[in-house]
Amino acid sequence: MKRQALLKHLRRYGCYLKREGSSHSLWVNPLTGHIEAIPRHSEIPDPLAARICKGLSVPPRPVDG
Image (cartoon, rainbow, N blue to C red):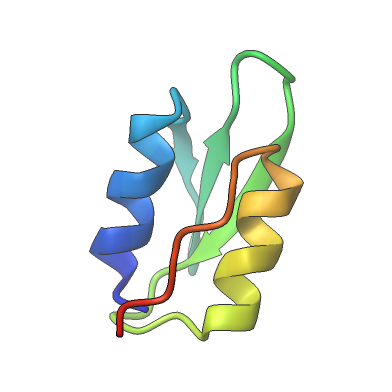
């Protein structure tokens, strides 16, 4: 999955960027307070994207067919 597609999906559910780390971005779900690190690669493996969504209490993004 493209990183930008994942970030757009997270924004749609109210998540926002908390801060940038050296190799990851930290995103927060304000409704739950959960924080997840998202790597700064142009392509993020689908299992990792699903784990990030689960950690932020966001429904997983459907896989593009």
